[in-house]
Length: 203
Figure 1: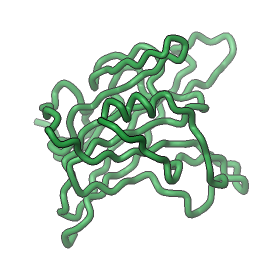
Figure 2 (figure 1 turned 90 degrees about the vertical axis):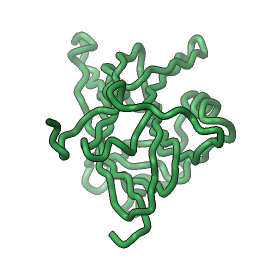
Figure 3 (figure 1 turned 135 degrees about the vertical axis):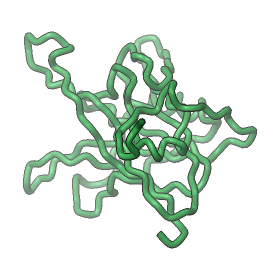
């Protein structure tokens, strides 16, 4: 029996939903690393006001995975947007890691986990890679090993107006870049822990 608070991946074990005829809402969050100039501590934040291109989910993903990270706001401040998001409708949610840091989502394909009792709201995890040399975009289903560096993933969420919050983890890997060390030994897991808020209701 699975405990309700156990972290589980979204992947082949989760029932998948076919895309609706009507394209659902798209939420996009780009994740950045910022150094607090006062404390010299690293902070993981969203890049505020990142524009979403027009098109279907496939077109949007193909554009975003190729797009270089740009920053139009000052470095870390107390008002930098927190690592959570609001979702009150059926949606595609896209997360991208800033392209100019030495990190990527976990190569084993287990890039997103959520609590067992929350899994019924999340479906169709896709991890995406981009090879600039060949201009090739590749997609991997959740839990499928990834070839190359994946900095973008997306999935479907059943948003509600019940007024509660789901916690989940994004699993990334940070390349420490230690000279003379094999690549597989340079990588360390990095767990990014945002929340999905389902606003409304009385909770």
